Amino acid sequence: MRTLAIILMIILLLTTSTSAAYGPTTGTPETAEEPPTKNTARPCDDLATIYERISCRINLPETQEYNYLPEECRNIGGTTGDQCITRYKQLQSCFTTKDYDVQISCARKKLAWTTTTVKKEAAFCKTAENFATCKQVLIEKTYNLIKFRIYILEQHINDLYKEGNITEQQATKIITTLEITKQQFNQATTIPAKKAVLAAAQEALKKFKTEVQP
Amino acid sequence: MKLLALSIILLLLTGCTPTTEQNTITEPTTIKEKPILEENYYTSLEEAQRDLDALSTLET
Figure 1 (cartoon, rainbow over the protein chains, first blue to last red):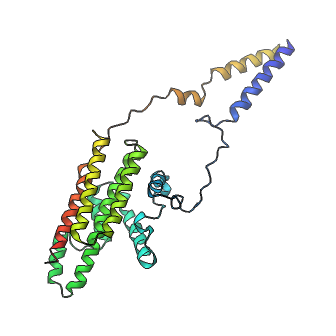
Figure 2 (tube, each protein chain N blue to C red):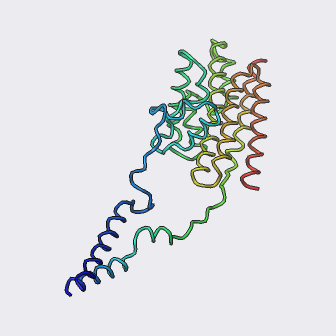
Figure 3 (spheres, helix red, strand yellow):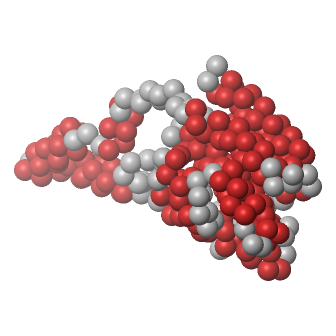
């Protein structure tokens, strides 16, 4: 009888020690560690392709959501590169809301718009004393607002992915296309050429829309 | 004998207590909602093109 009691005690002890080695919810060992990353400060920046970097960036934890070098600023050096990064940092603060109109309104303020439309700003420039400077500033502000519109789209797609409405592959593919759009937009030297870049992005977006919501 | 009785009670208690792991397995799967693709996000590129049109008025 005593032997039986001892055996039962041993079984009890074994059961307790086995369950203690596992986590409370997942059943996986607690000792599992994250794989080391090359750049711990900005983990996605060192990846070789834009697709890989976007794929990494959309999976960043919420606390590090914007902890990446913006693709548009990647190949720009010197002061212009720094200005590009600063602009992104300023505009990222407009993502505290999910409301599109509020985001645009916020960006206008950050980009120092005095009126609500390009048409009105252009009309103002036509009467301005220093037309050339006014025009140049307006061109810059307009281009930056257009690129912010694209960035809003990227964020919206990122949200769709995080909410589980689209796959990682779908999100990465379209965000990569939109990032390349911004680069091509910068490279295009005329307004018709820039419009053509935006039209191509619009087509890609239509295709994406059909894919995710047939 | 007392020790045996105590062991059996302890075993029964351990066996009857549901573990967290069991709860995780039996949790119902959440059905994902369809994507909400708000139209204004997709018309933003049209707005961008209109902005460029407005900008081109400065050229004339």
